[in-house]
Image 1: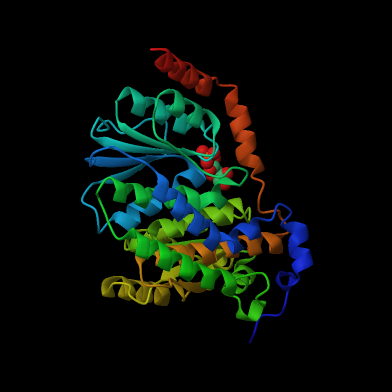
Image 2 (image 1 turned 135 degrees about the vertical axis):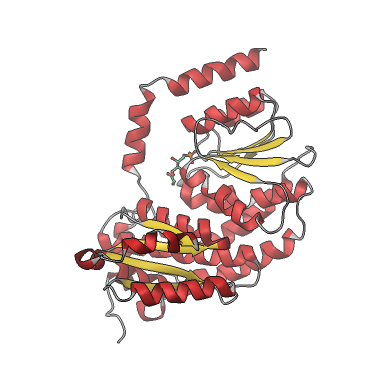
Length: 371
Ligand code: F6R
């Protein structure tokens, strides 16, 4: 039976709730990816091949690093870490490339890792739309890539993620990105139109998913190159839909998470699970997903699947991200919440200003400039 038409097919109602138009970023994502790919090509880097790579950032500015880690896993021989904290790992040194990403350029933890990277004489590239990160990168003659301003950090994923593989290519760690970038944009154009607000609910995967997930806590299960994609899906449910959500990945979830459903009983109706799938998923993973679904389906938990599209890894990852982004906005609409504002994050940042930690970091950066 087809789901009944809902508010999701009423464009005027959608606009009323999605006041700052988060949906337009989902619709325009292919264009943003195309522009980001062009910008990424312009980065000038004169660093040698690094021995290790660290992407330092928080939240919407860190997920690009996680995606990079999955994307690069089977193609580069240099380890990639994502640092979502105040301090860099102890191994960071002159041979480490640190990619410091903060959309605002003002995030306390990221500025702290930037300071450490400067002190440790790491090779550094900064990415931000401005802020203190841009200011100090300029003053310290550190390469800085400026991304377009005025968006929510999570909506700027194309600008925060695409430069990362491009940087790996520029330091000689990978090649052949052009073809992968163009396929990604092509696949995203299709995904964006299939999930667009104009596409009715009965033909629209994201609207259908949002309608079914509504009223539950979704858990998103990924694997391999879809590990961080599952995380992005989850964080979009948090920030856009203002909905609790969780994420896990195969095969690890078979060794703990799965037991949590064993006696779900009355909890079962509170959850839904989205399995990320791929026509070319490894045999061992396919079997695990099938067996896991069979076991979990004994509880009354709603189960859904989202399949990656395209041929290249980047296209596949981006196609699922696109579905997740749309779904999270449609879920926000169903819940009557504006997807864009993140009041609690803003409140937290405001409260934490009083600790003076960020000011201390800024003072230390100023000292380094004067040296
Ligand atoms: C995403 C979001 C947050 C920020 C995070 C770090 O839209 O609002 O997850 O990305 O608080 O801030 P920035 O990205 O400015 O470094």
